[in-house]
Length: 510
Image (cartoon, rainbow, N blue to C red; front, side, top):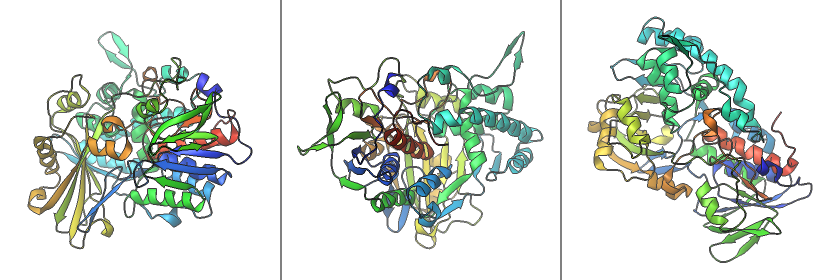
């Protein structure tokens, strides 16, 4: 790929590196680059760090407004090991969530799934859904592990392959042959895995909820999306005491300890090119910042605006940025009365109208309103609410852009009431965070949220390479390889740092 051949030259002396945006991936790159001996300055248009990883506090209640749980914490353990003496656990308190999740299905059945225990999950599913259900899910996880083993390095640990079409065309999930009439077929989508291999509407809903949480339509998401539930099963689900914002704080403070400079309230209006390569930034207040490299932690549409009328950032032979990704709607609930000890940290309330919900989110045009799938987070954390009260966060996947109506919020509360019947009686106040709020926090048009990179699907769910056709310009964060999500953002930081420090020959962590 031309972008890879145009990667930044290997840096042997101290370089000036300008980073656009203080999202988690951008800060991860900044910390690693500073440890390598470079002068790194981060320019952030808002007044704080973290990108989508924010925290809202009011009347003694505190809520994560972005991600609420941390999968694959090893990514951040590696970041802290590589950038200083203090390990991650010395900077934040990680708590393994158990059960990992509670699921309320449309037919009224429910199940609580233990954290990172295949045998425990199999047993719980058999008890809740009937003999054989757990075995089918367990067998699926074995196949999902094979897909993970085949794609882990190219999708998480290595720069995007120059011959990325091999990832686009090859389906890594070993689907089971399915005979229908005179034909034998294999599942090519997540929905087909649910229908043909799991053979239970509730198991299919469990599977599809992982895709939906990442903004993916299970009817079109490739079978390779099986790696999403596998990651959670294999590496566990973790909560950061005090909220995920504490993780962003720890990364920010690690950057400061390594002499990374931050300039807040600094809107970048252009990327300066000189002699055919990125050479600095133009700021809204009129100044120009010179640099040897530019690392852009922004969405593709924003990057396009920063380089108007110049060399194309990406060519026709390269991965196209993900477009029309959905957003998230979050309802923050301050409840009177304490959290019951038996309450699950995370509960997923599945919709009664699967097709209606998916058409509403992914239809073209967007379909009519439907009862949503709601994820409820009830952290067992004294920092989240005043004594004797409880902070609850409800999250649903929604189309990016459209405004939210009161009936939309009412449908969310109605669905959540299936898991928390006394919700309305306990409600002190609520606050709604929409796609417009995400757009304000991140600068992404419409408040869209990027999905993790996935193999197959013709490359539709890959993310563009971290290198670009403009030498000296690299991209980091959820809108570039390896895609959205906290682990992926952290890995993008590692990849960008490697490409700058070691040059085009960098092939990822060993």
